[in-house]
Image (tube, rainbow, N blue to C red; front, side, top):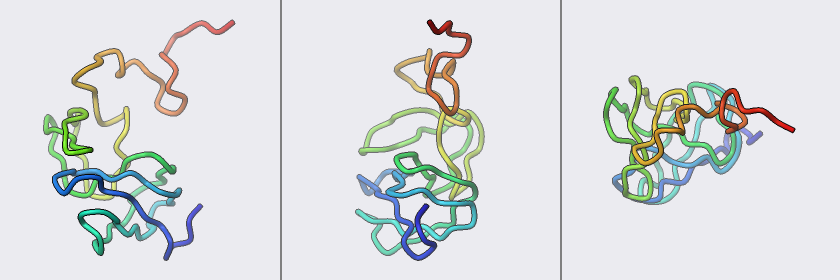
Length: 114
C-alpha cells in the first residue's frame, strides 16, 4: 500500500481519461498523476490495486475509455473521477467475452477447474 503522499498513477497519453496505478491506494488516498498531466491529483474513491486503472475525469455511460491514446473499452455505467475502472464498469469493444470474466481473478465465470 502506498503512503498517502506517495500514491501515483501514470497517464500514458494526454487524451487518456484513465491512468494506471503505480502502487495500491485505499479509498480517500490522494493520487498524484505522472505523465502528460503531471502535477494533477485525484482522490481515489475506493481501493485500487497496483496496475489497475483510475478514472481521471468523469466518463459517462456509453462513453469511450481511453488509455495509450486509443479506445480500450466503453463505460457500462457512469464512472466518477477517482473510481476504479475495471470489468464491473467497463466492457471491451474488441472482446465481448471480457464481460464474462471474474472481477478479481480474471477467470471466465462458471469455468471448470481441474
